[in-house]
Image (cartoon, rainbow, N blue to C red; front, top):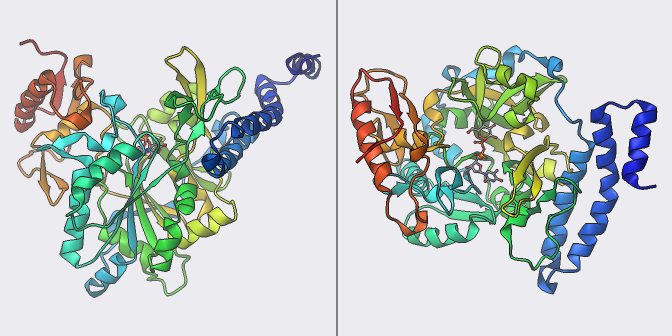
Length: 479
Ligand SMILES: Cc1cn([C@H]2C[C@H](O)[C@@H](COP(=O)(O)OP(=O)(O)O[C@H]3O[C@H](CO)[C@@H](O)[C@H](O)[C@H]3O)O2)c(=O)[nH]c1=O
């Protein structure tokens, strides 16, 4: 009798729920996966065997957590956040001005640079899309750090976590920063096999097959392990660095904040309160914040809840701003020695997010991912800080980009601030028709811009400058 038939029989006789059924069949898959991974390893070129062994060890770990995990979050178990879970940003101070330099010298800035510009119709890394005056996310990020280093006479390094999708292109682009006064380091996150949705086995059959469709970067939660494996974590600890500030490269509001830096590095309680090893910057949720994550209290712990983990029936409730009032900006501060301790003891236990995809070949696959903020529950004394919206300027769609392209924001030293000429403290809600989904039709690395997009931009700039408009809706333009 086949495994599937045996399971069917068990289901009929034991009256198992469909969730239990799914879990039990998944568990039986682990053995088959092991055989498949061993077979795949034999197809690796001899000089890459060690690399693949390490990647598969991480993948095996993630896959078995996926098999062990309960299928969905138990919605009624979500509790209101405890009172002290989220600190108010206004309660923080910069601390002693004479020691700011000392604190900055113990900081490392890390930007998550594994994402592509595909959602805005671009090939290549998202970070090389021009935002303003032909300056890209990467240019502006470097300007921000260079400005900080000049202002305080320090040398805060910038680390980029690339993925196999962005590593080569980023390396090419980085050459142009040879004269910039910022120490830039890069490392590449893991590369895990995409899984056939039906068989739950890796799609790839030969490790020499160059087709990148067979692989996925396993989410930014992979940061902790990959940073450790890169050797950079140890290097920075040995140099006396204490904290890292980690953020999405597509959030230009994620600059180094001296108040939060002082909060994580200074024990003002004289040892009475446990110092936070981890801080998540959250912000008041708006109706624009539909995709992403929020902090919840679950099974007596703080937990990041991502939209992908929300059962279908509760998605509207999750998106509402009444029950879930705050939003994870993904600006995270983590103590380097704590990352080392947790990785070495295999104690970073991130919820597995299952991301279904449909490949060009027609195959339905799943990719397993984790989110960096989910580690909040593993660090000691972790908390959230409710930061002003100016620290969260995400660019996920061309409509977000339009705001940053327009003169709604002033730029100084790579930092964006809302123009004083704007009569409202809020930004306009921009809705663009589908003809403006793409930044440009060609490769972002090769330059050249899309004329329709530029016209739309010019039109919107004039709307934004008019204080009577709080909404910009451009469905289509004819010319
Ligand atoms: C999946 C993945 C992403 N990235 C990079 C690309 C982006 O710069 C950054 C965020 O990735 P996204 O896939 O866009 O994640 P996003 O949907 O924005 O969600 C994150 O950021 C949101 C705020 O924008 C938070 O509310 C969510 O809790 C958090 O998970 O991380 C990587 O470097 N590696 C990856 O594997």
